[in-house]
Image (cartoon, rainbow, N blue to C red; front, side):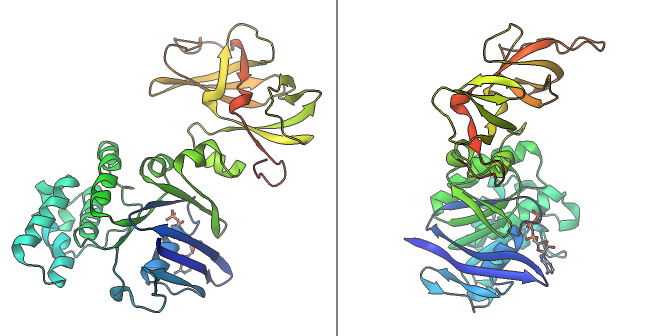
Length: 360
Ligand SMILES: Nc1ncnc2c1ncn2[C@@H]1O[C@H](COP(=O)(O)OP(=O)(O)OP(=O)(O)O)[C@@H](O)[C@H]1O
């Protein structure tokens, strides 16, 4: 049964309709990630759920009760903000423990919970420091720890790892879900980072244009994006979106003929989406491959990312795993660009309507 239900919620600021007729439900213990570009309304949505902002229309239900008209403090919800909001005169320890103090939790239990959260978030060595002596990443983790200790039934987290360095962020991505699952906490987690969304979410809700464009498992959002726009938000380098025209039994893409093995879109024109890892580059000519020049090569972890340019100017990104690098030492110096052939893996491609971008 759903624990948090949002029913036809709308919120405008002047003429700017930030959230439009939005409905969704989150199960108890579920980790829902709200992902979307900057300005999409992610923070406004969390504030609506927390009760810090009142909706123009619609309802918020928690555990079956309508809490739309409840004040924030009446709701069993904790929220960690992007901009930390710590008490400046209190140590990190007291900041983290403040909700427990307010709830009259005894000192020994308070210390236990604060230390547990601080250890998990790797700030146990700075518990005695005032906020001004903490780095931004430590402030952010202090605010996160404060939201964790009160063990609310619903936790709203607004991009809590934004200022955290890469190593700690990586560790948090692994450990946060484990911790929260152990407590059966229901989480709505906002991020602009698609990798974080994929690592943390049981489901990802993609917010854009006032509404959710897709709510699905990370695997489905990546492998079956509902639109070209969503496909482009997930992946680095981003998916190639190539205009395609039906030509006989195949497709014409970047002025070349590509054979279709069954996965044919039933329209004369569409946009073909091919992820860089599904572009196979070879220095040998191959039938059905697009002749290209290799314009740029850059390493990305153990992969090699290439920017290819077809004869008609179409740019295509390719990403090859280690061991299959086409130009192992990078590009030769000088203006000469190596000729190569790019084969698009049609069986793994996505097709979208040209005008609307909707998946076909
Ligand atoms: N109090 C307010 N008054 C007027 N406009 C507001 C207010 N709060 C938010 N907005 C507008 O609502 C829109 C969405 O803002 P919001 O902060 O929710 O975006 P976001 O998706 O969280 O972005 P980011 O990822 O950059 O934090 C923006 O256009 C913003 O200017």
